[in-house]
Length: 133
Image 1 (cartoon, rainbow, N blue to C red):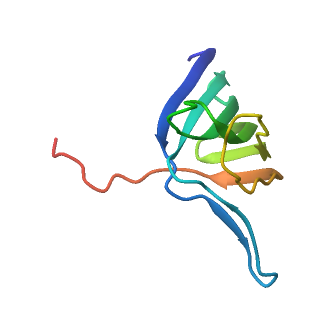
Image 2: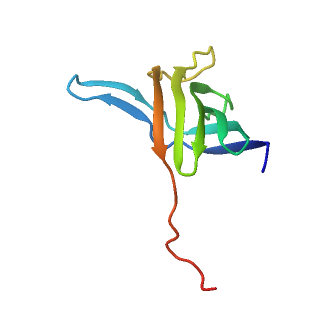
């Protein structure tokens, strides 16, 4: 049995579209600008194979020739809980914050949001194709 394990993730990718639209109220909250990309860093701990905690930060940036790192929003996520087999019980908080900088970033509609939840989930997998023994 592993007493304590570290999990991690680092990624970079394009952000072709990110938008929020208020249906029924006719408003557009945010649209990602052209040449956008995201970077994500996630780190977590698993203790005694049943208790877990994870923190995630994802930053959306816009590339331009004059300024390489030009962030306009950051999404934070924290997840803690316990699991037994396929049953996961935990607490999750997600929040999105605008990044307001003095860099020459084109006008971008920025917004903030958050969600907090307590959850019980069933997680699993099913082998669809398995090699013969």
